[in-house]
Length: 403
Ligand code: ADP
Image (cartoon, rainbow, N blue to C red; front, side, top):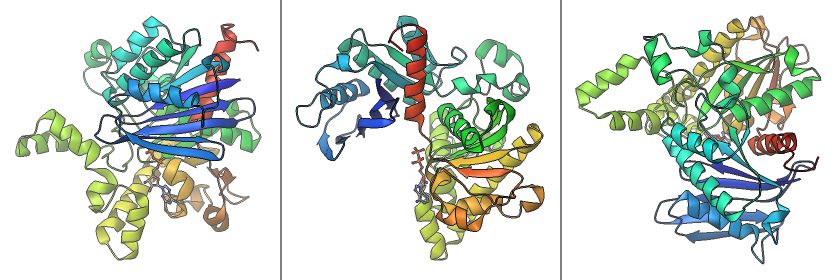
């Protein structure tokens, strides 16, 4: 089954055409700097690739370009869109409405746009992409997979904030959680690698990319997660602060006479690894700066690992144990130094990192010792594959494609 997976970011649009049965990626690519002066599209089909620099004013245009490249006489991989069985769209925010993937119709599209108030940078772009697909690929099922959906199982004790209850009841202010597709994928993969049913496992998944979150996956379901009402909460990130005392926010706003938008920009774009180190949001550059003796880069690194440790500790206690911890995304998959720092000194409570496996293993791999009570894995996340699988399952359920 050929599925086109669309992943719209705030100023990017990534896509993959893949065969979910064979795992083959037939064509993939990304549009970058959408809405800026010089945008670009990068396309790869097997050995062939191309990059064009051009103007891409919005996500609708980006989607049109992608569809054009899929049918391009040189690099294209289909002659007719009817060769594509379905399209799966990654949607960041499904609000209170969606606890799993759905076939997109007018009502679903309206709800995605409505939830855009909670994730304006992502949902509106995704909605534009959906509209372009519906228009250019009539009759081909469009499916939405939500990042928030996996976290809808988080119980009230973990998703209600300790503020007046009316905000929860009347304004839907609650923890939603993010990166759900990635947490779901890597927790399932860890269970598979352990050869045990996920329903019997307690797993802590750490998605450590530019953005990052930690999730407690209890018996296959999200039980708690570090991101909250927005993706700003939780661990320290590349440019995001993560959890801080809310009074810091109001205090800075009052003293510097800042608007909510200005303060939001500081917390989202100027904080985290970048804000503390003053060097970069990129861990590789932080590593280099540490190498040349930069003390603030060292502090940023230490703080980063410490916030991840804090949530692992919290979730270990919340679930009364953990069978496995998974590290994924750019940092989790690639940084032995961060992984080592996270588990340093935790042998007495059951986490034993294997130095050699941690240094030389390539994900997906186990990086704990054979006698570690809690297993530790580095797993390459694959959100596109899970979205394609969701798309296949829901299309089969509704008889939209033959099984
Ligand atoms: P995004 O959230 O943008 O998808 P990624 O999952 O690509 O982010 O992760 C980006 C982060 O991963 C950056 O901080 C980058 O430094 C880090 N990273 C990527 N490769 C490596 C590596 N080989 N060693 C250390 N860090 C890495």
